[in-house]
Length: 565
Image (cartoon, rainbow, N blue to C red; front, side, top):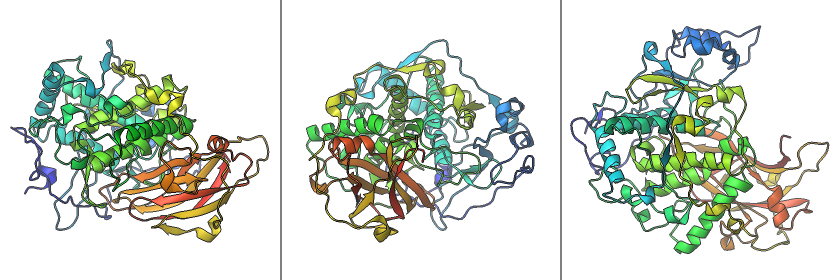
């Protein structure tokens, strides 16, 4: 069989089949070739800190890859992280089928700045509202077939579009100006990069079917009506919207589990729906009070990957869990298509899934009073995509904040998790905490079995924030692995606790990558409101329980601190 890097859909559409991809996809190794650096990064005014350099020198040194328009802008003296699109890194395993997810290389002389200026606004609608055989279904399948039949060298080809995601999300590029890897996951880049990615995928579809009113649907997994894989993606094996590497146990009518763990068995559909609504309420409202909660932590030039901070709440739950619930995982180290970052965009339902993730951004801003970052390193982070005419264009985060300027909005459908009835409720108030060791007696530890830890609460001093944050720090794991553990607070019987109980704080999860790299990151939870609801406001310590749901991970500590301390 030809290497995956050479596979395309040229001449005829090839439906998903077990012969199209290897049964066990190869894993990336940790050997990297060093890209040739074609410019010098100079410190400014004696500055010698890693990753700090005069951005004008770097941008101009690329001969126009990022353009003089940005270099002349005062914001160019900021420190946004930028991918080096001139050097995509192959990732292969010796004696295995090659996984090369590098899209066609960018010609620096062809890159143009792109600023959206839509004159009409189309509406993205829920995928479950469309029927197989409808006019919309015919348009959508026609667009995907045409995309799959484009030449493999065409950057608009369906496989090449999947490669764009793989390269940007799974270590295909280094950072511009230093050899550290670039990734749009697990940081504040997650939402804006994926918004742009969907935008150009949608524009390519419009162009191929000559219909500028066409929009991508969204998988409405946050409402009961949409909590199944939409029928248009699962109608027949020969459909271009079908993918054979979805988990066969999770096909309709199985209700999506928004906090799925490997090995979970389906529960009563009504219970699952109730759990899902509570998860959405927790993630979008209780745990997403600030931009850092929602989007993720800052990611600036020179920051390490994958230790680039902490993923936003929505990226971990429900985003990661819908991925892993949908994709095939024959064992915990062998995820396929939607179950792994490197292959996920090969499944057409990926785009509906991420359209709903993007919709969460609009809901957080418009319904929940959220706000975007004003940090220039976020606003002036730039990406390059190929547009509907197969021409490379440069875009920035600041230009995707208003979806109407991009030419789309989301249909105003019911949002049941906003209702107070979806809010998790205490399983039992004012528990007597069982005895358990403190953090110093427990950590570091390999989490291969449940653990209980008693954590002291800090005493507030000064005039700073009184919001308490539980921090699970030094989480180490192999990025190739599916990783998940659940976190409970003041719960003496986790077997009796469900996601619709206040004691269940949430989860930490990793969506598997293709390359091998040991990650070291953290996970935070807001607990002030939770402790109030549990009747534990005056407790001087809390019980934290960690339940492994996957491959073991190493954890180096747990503490409680005040926000911004």
